[in-house]
Amino acid sequence: MPAPTTLLSLLEPHGEQHLLAYWDQLSEEERNGLQSQLMAIDWSEVTACKKLVEAHHEKKSIVKPQGFENIATPRCQKLGEQDTATSDALRRGHECLRTAQVGAILMAGGQGTRLGFNEPKGTFPIATISKATLFDVLLGQLRAIKKRFGSRIPLGIMTSASTDTATRKFLAEANFCGLDADQIFFFCQGNLPAVDATTGSLLLDACDHVAVAPDGHGGMLQALIEGGGLDWFRQQDCRTLVSFQVDNPLAKPLDPEFLGYHLLSGSSLSTQVIPKIDPEERVGVVTESDGVTRIIEYSDLPQPIAAERLPDGRLRFFAGSIGIHAFETHFLEDVASSQASLPLHIAHKKVPFINEHGRFIKPSAPNAFKFERFIFDLMPLADSVTVVEIDPAEGFAPLKNPSGASQDSPETVRQALNAYAIRHLEQAGIIVASGAHVEIDTASVFDDEDLRLIATSGVFPKNRIDGPHIIRAI
Ligand code: UTP
Image 1 (cartoon, rainbow, N blue to C red):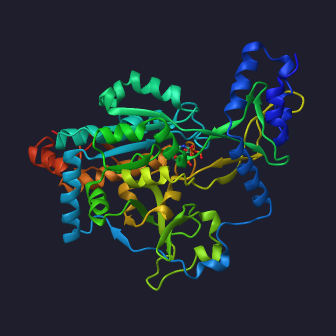
Image 2: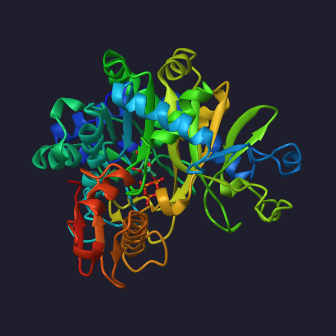
Image 3: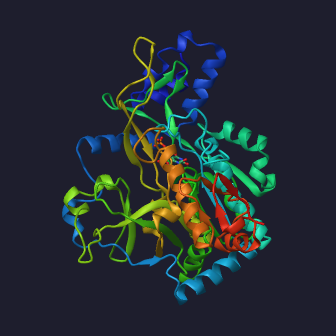
């Protein structure tokens, strides 16, 4: 049976008729599936993606190397400095948590290809002793807030076609990690097709399916609005939204001091950064030029500029982004209604595909380009941005790579969680024996005050922990 002319005339202007190469061999159901997918693709986006591939081949960069003279690192507010600014910020942050005028958005749509775990990353058992999952650890923070402040913080969870079904199933079976089912709003981000790096054409990853990938964490804004999420938050009186990433179990998007700095500054966007120490670290840096704040990706920062140092020895561009942001909802609404779309970014990746002989190929080297939007590209659109520097040991332990990798692996993340727990217990007056493993239960322990209460309660004789222990607040 020939392909419908509607499909042919849709594909021909883009030179993509090859996507129908197996039409004759498909069942009716498969044809319907492929037809719906092709009709749903935003072809103007495909054209934009292909232009980006051309620009990439011509090595055009968004930031020209000669343009760096006028770019600087913005002033950063440091977290935990214990000065008057800290206490003002803490007071304001606590008030915000008490009144639940803030909502949280967890970015859980990534494919986690580097980790090589077959399930959504959030279901990865990360905790040192209990093996609690990333979802347990992160959603637990909202339970601890309820215990301390009596408030229920609304949570949006962004999934993608790659993670949606499995995430919803996992969380329903896990009783939403102790949250109320109606405290969570699930919304699914969009996809963008991948493009063959050699031919510049779209790829099939099955005879009846075009290869697509999630459209990046920057897909959040469109998905949130189209899915009704922004209305859902607004109905619950959330004026501020924080966003954070599922692969960082130390993430503290609702840290009261961070929230306080954001709210007291009146900025429409705030962001957490960690000091970049080594110029080779593959993190984007927050920069400022002519009053506009933006993140420059590590790949856009020429090595000699990335290695430049300030008189105090810090890197000139030291403010490494960790993907934790606070937004005012009116700012998100303004951006959405202005129809401004975030720029597309290109990445050279391994994308499985069907070759010209109909065989499924799993490439061993990058063969295609994927396209993503980044949520931090909202920064230049904000009238003011507050940058808050945190100690990485306190808030950044990303899980990116498989077991055995030298960094960002399950082992390095567990080490960071254990070191964090030991440090905070010791600050509270509880000594942990050398080599012992301890785990802080994020669902009951909100902050150091809970640990000090444990220390004064006599739960641990002589305030000493000798063996593996999960610390729960009393
Ligand atoms: P990464 O860019 O590290 O991607 O995402 P990833 O999917 O986790 O891992 P790789 O690159 O395939 O190995 C950083 C955070 O942004 C979320 C991820 O879930 C993670 O929390 N993210 C990323 C999305 O929610 N959607 C996306 O399209 C991309």
